Length: 314
Image 1 (cartoon, rainbow, N blue to C red):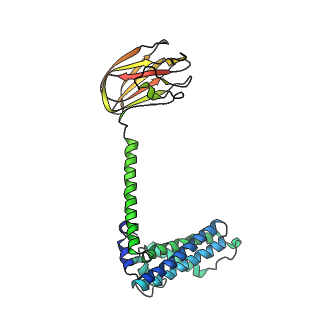
Image 2 (tube, rainbow, N blue to C red; image 1 turned 60 degrees about the vertical axis):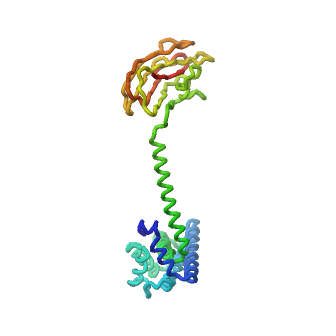
Image 3 (tube, helix red, strand yellow; image 1 turned 90 degrees about the vertical axis):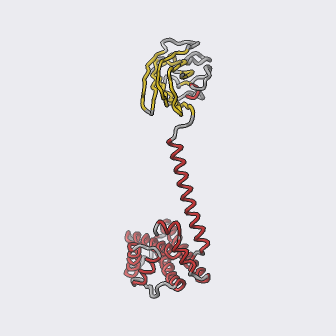
């Protein structure tokens, strides 16, 4: 089936309109029983009843083949469409089966005519396993070729609309997902490599000097601040932490990397040389026109770990 036919089903609808209601019902019944037997054959085969599964698969193919004369009678397609004849190939070709699929179907029919099916599971050989899958594939191909004639034009119209609608929905979903995954969040956000309890990286940019980003004990790490849209930064201001309840952690040596257009535009190495219970702001001159990301990395710490109260810029 071509991509155009898959979505528009124009040939299928034209065929369905030529089939009388009683013929449509009979065709649908035959194909439905064939499909049910194919599904039962798969269950038997997967549960180890391989000989019976193969026989039931052959029955399913036989029923699907029985639907072909009913189809040609109902649609006025070529008569005498017996396996191997030009009419047989013509009908299936008109129904969208490729030459390769038709040849495969004829090969299966030839194989079935030339070999006896095993009666017991212990008689099933590897070649029978290959034949089983070929038989089910042939039955499915026939069902796909003939089933549009067993559907009403309204059912095919619903199927067409559903396929088009689902494709549009998936395409929109993919576009939205790609946008969400690739875009930067609007505003200012901070994400830390690690943090203790609830003291995450966002506390380093919340404007509250009493809150801190805190790393786990004796751990180095970093916090990345993204800025969208980019801003001009003339001065970078840093306020060290101290963990006001215990006075047991603060940053010592650090490195700040400022990014412009996703590339490092400036690097600042600094140090809070002493631990302070009441830290003072430290300022660094920057002078960059467009900063879209700031990465603050802890290189060493005071006492048992690192804490940073604020990162600000002007």
